[in-house]
Image 1: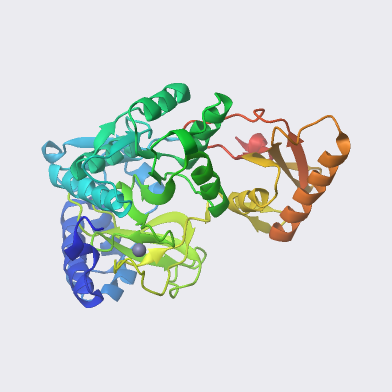
Image 2: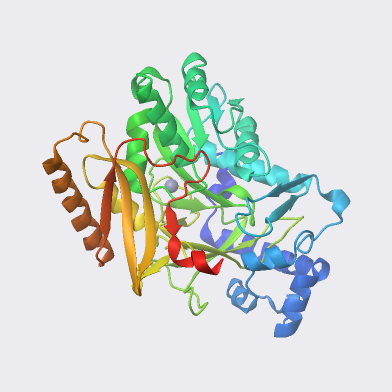
Length: 436
Ligand SMILES: [Zn+2]
């Protein structure tokens, strides 16, 4: 099922000619209207007319999150402000937020991209979708809302939080689809179980659109089991658009990138050089169809690889792997690169654990210490010490085989670790505290 069959199944050759035209147009508009890009291109001695093929994109400068901060608030806006009809902002955990600007056409394109996402999950008129992404400055809430509404589904704008009421609405309204972060989906499922409500059995939930944070395969399975739905991974980011940049189809094998709207590169994060398909690297995106805030070669810091083969669903857009880590989530522990997602994968392979964990990195004299706190299942946490010790050993072995470094494990009672209703805070790095 497609929302825009012509776009989503466009032959590669035609797609590339659309991309080139849009790239040239984007570079021209960025050069003319955004001093930041004009200066950056001038410094490289590049004029918009020098972009003659898609591979010429490599001549363009990168844009980083720091550039968004340095040009805050209006430095990357390419239209007169009276054409802007909406402004979103990312949660700035440190320093200034990232602001994103949309003309009416940008909002229309965004809604269409989200409509494609939801149609890929077979959402249609007659469905009731509960949107438990946070409404507000965060792009998740309104982004999912507009897409679902365009498809013709009935939207329940529940926003995030108040899990008991979420469950009540899911049941009483006969909700068929859910949109939220994967960690919040688990909280809803878990709360249901605590209340004695098995949503997998008692609800009409059929499909879920989960994004804004990484979701590993075992975590997906957990969500599907406790909610009784097909969990589709969706991807987006405020700097580029919001949700709708990439999404899974029902095959759940990689996320199709909306290539008619974004030019995709995967680079070596160290050298900045392009990598061939199949190789793991940092995802870099150039907007091809944005008016208010065109962005050239945005370094997403997300680590992915591209699938070289085509998808049986018929979409011609390239697929990327699920996000397995972020360049800035990467911890370096005793000289070894550690991604929190690797730890999560390892934990979810061991029976008797809950998908709630925290990673604590500390420095004992001069040596980094990695400690993983993880909740055990209710039925395993007993006063008998022996089974716990066996479990702890299992977890340690699993972690060591994945990470290649010695790890401490602390098993804790169910419900002990802090729950988050937005993005889960998984890592506590105590090594930096002195510097802040
Ligand atoms: Zn597909």
